[in-house]
Image 1: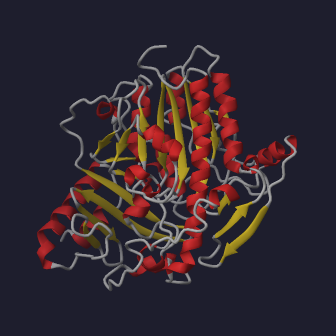
Image 2: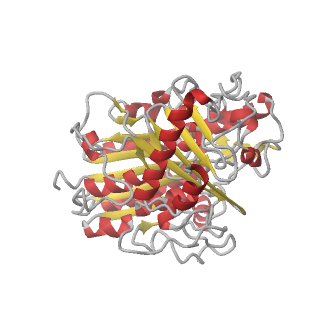
Length: 481
C-alpha cells in the first residue's frame, strides 16, 4: 500500500461542544481515549461547521459544498431543503473515493435521505445507494433506538434495553434517561460493533479502506448507562460562563430556541447526561482504536475525529439546541487529525478551517490531486505535513437558513478575533472575542467598532461572491449601502 493511500477512519459525533474535550479547555467531561488519541494528533483550534444543522452540515461532508450550493439547506422533508434525498452524483465523496480504488464503508446517522419512521426501506438515498458498504439508517433517527437492525442485534444477543429515571420538561421534546441495562445494549456499542465488522472485512482486501462511523450522540435524547452517569452524578456543575446574559441588543430570533426556565438547576441534570453520553462514546472509540492496534492497522490509518456542529445546553439565558444563533458553542466544532505517520506529540493548528475542507482533505489523502479535490473548501493536508501555505483564507464562514418550518437567513464570519453575524430582518451581531470570549456584548452599535464592522461586512460580501451565495444581492441592499 502506497504512502499516498492510507486507510482513513472518520469518526463523527452529532452536536458536540468543543469544551467536552480537555484539548479545547474542557475540565469536567471525561474522554480518556480521545485524550490519548489527541496526544498523537493535530488539533484544529478554529474549525467551523458549514451550518449548525444536521442535514446541511452532513451534506457538506459528502459534497464539499456549502448548503446554499448543495441546496439541502434544512433538515430533510422541511421547507428550504430542495432535495429530500442527497443527489447521487459523481462528485460525492463516496464516488470519488471509489475511483481511487478504496473500499468504502459507513454506519450510523445519515440524515441525508428522508425515509419514513415506519418504513426504513423507503429512502431513495442511503449510504449503500451512493456506493458505501454498510448500514442504511434513513431519516433523523432520534438517537438510533428504533431501527430494525438494532432490534435484531439485541435479540441475537439476548439483550434488552432498560431505561429508568427519565427527565423532561426543560425544552419541548428533549429528554434524558439512565440506561440500567449493560453497556452492550446501547446504540453506541452496537454502532462500534458494526464498524469493527466492516473494517474486519476491508482489512483482508488489498485495497485501502475509508470508513465513516457516525454516532447519534451526544445529541439529545441524552441517554447513558449508570457507570457513566456516576462520573458526574454527585458533582456540582458551575453555570456556563455565558449562562447569565443580560444584554438587551441581541436578536429576538434567539428566543425561538429559549427554554422554559432560565435557572441553572434546570439545565444541570441534562448537562450531566450529555457528558455521560460523551464518555460512553469515548469508551466505544477506545474499543475501536484497540481493534485497529490489535490488527496492525493503527499506524497506517489516518483518523479524523469531528462533529457536524455544536450544542447550546442553556447558554445565554437558556438557549437550547442549535441554529437561530451563531455562538461559538454551536458553530465551532472539534477537529482532530491523527496522521498516518506517528507524531511524538500533539500540536495545535490555529488557521481557520471548515466542514467543506474535510471533504477535500480526505480526497487529497486518497491521492486525488489537491486542485481537483477543491470545491467550496480545500485540503488542509499541507498543515498536517508541516508545510508552509501562504494563501490560506484568513476567515471562516458558517451559514444558517432556519430550521424546521421557520426559514431564516444568517451568515457568520470569523476573522482574527472578530465575529460578525448577518441576521436578515433582525439586529446584526459583532463580537470581539479577544475581550469578550463568551459573546456577551454585541458591539454592532458601538461607534468604536464602526470601521471594524464595515470591514467585516465587506469581507463577508467578498466571501459570498467567491462562493456564489445567492443571498449576496439582498445582503448588499440591506447592509452595504
